[in-house]
Image (tube, rainbow, N blue to C red):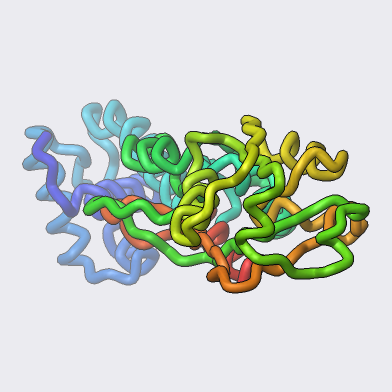
Length: 300
């Protein structure tokens, strides 16, 4: 049968006439004119190559072909109605899945409170989270393995970057460290301390290294680790000082187990955090739109 864009309307008219046995009553039920219903039926019969009704003085009766076609028409209409309801629910964020890709620090220190707020509003949405460096997050977004990515801004012609917040790098020391009572130090003084670095493959490592290069000093000693949590523990134990992302320090700063120290004569180091989304994904709806809204509410 040809794929007529009016097929749904034709099937709807066919079913209404079959239920009521009368074109006039079907037209009233569908808020159409009798000629419009008749034209739809003739078009459908022409597509199928058979007569679907036998016209009698007492109304319209299904032909043998009409009775055979009836359950298929009913299933088609029911399937379209179910699809419409699914799209409505998806648009409203009531159902569906949301796949998120996030950089390690974001997934550990920021994403949990965002997801808690999102879940309160969209409890029935299935959530999936994958973690990777921002380059990997970008690839997951490009391959449509994630609806939204969160990380530092990496520009790509197929990806939209949505600003979220700026994460500041803080110099932190142990509570008993001499720098803690002073509250500020110079880059030259910092260079005399053991500097604890983490994750050589991350942008945080490069930001720290760049700060020293710009100041023209070289740390006397370094200790390299592969994650932020280990770096924090080392600083707390007095094994060195570190420049760490503020978003990873909330509980330690509140408990005062780590103390922030101002770097005199050095620029404040900030790293933008953005949401990444494919440009061809269309206008965000449902869970995606809800998650973007939650991001701005929680982080704004």
